[in-house]
Length: 336
Image (cartoon, rainbow, N blue to C red; front, side, top):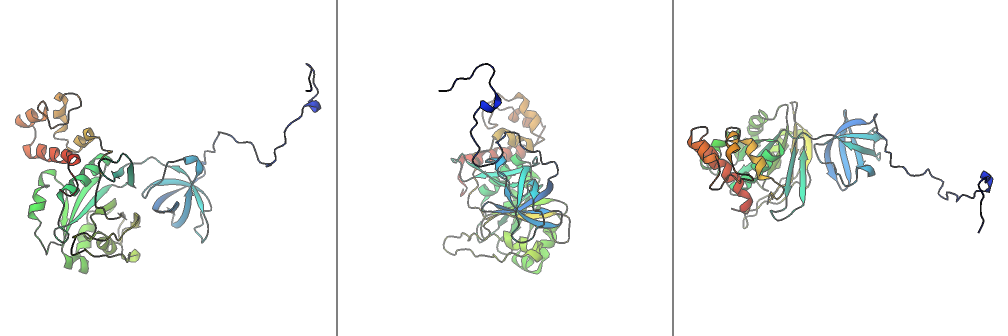
């Protein structure tokens, strides 16, 4: 073994050659200050379609983002080929801060949450009044997810020619949720789209609903130039609709400054990720009354201060009932 003294010559030091000939790795990542901004329109098997200025660009996620995934509605920073030409690929290097987040789990026992949409202003909950039958529990769960994620809810009731909306609307009257009631004829002649559009102008609206309720048909009427030929049918035996939308897709609203995001039809809406303490924020008339609640109060127990708050006339008892009904949705299945 060769020994070196205190005054070794640099030429005497042997170094191992870099066979790959590339630069050494570093933990310092580029800041990409010149990256272009864009919006994610849809995600398909690792490829993200984004809108950059007025160009549609296909991109992939940069390795440095790790497991962090971009979703439809995300504002992102991109580098690389941003021309939008065929067979070009850009790279997403940053996901900007989100203003809202719609999430769900497969069921209430599933700890893995799925991000559905980011940065939406409101959630349009589409449900049929018949064929298939309305599912209030599913509506309640969508409302809880909207309140938790920072989205304003909008109820869109379809097929009013088959069943009147009064009974269903009565369940949500105390929540002051805006709503639109449509019939099958109005969906076909465009009147339904015109009335729904009044609630969408200047906003990013995510549409969610059980399969077969006419959600994608309504979106097609709102965005005719991007019609998705995916209208399905309802199974006459099970009453369930066929899933006609397979991935979320953001589309510019026809004739107005806004966006609609069509999402796949859902048969369940798990809330395992929801912190019940955040739902109270959607009830500003009740929230001050929680100051006297015991720690970690579920707002549906004997010592809950909200009962006294309502008894003293600070809020309507129907509002407290609505809050407790929404909070109880985690204890029931979607089919209730």
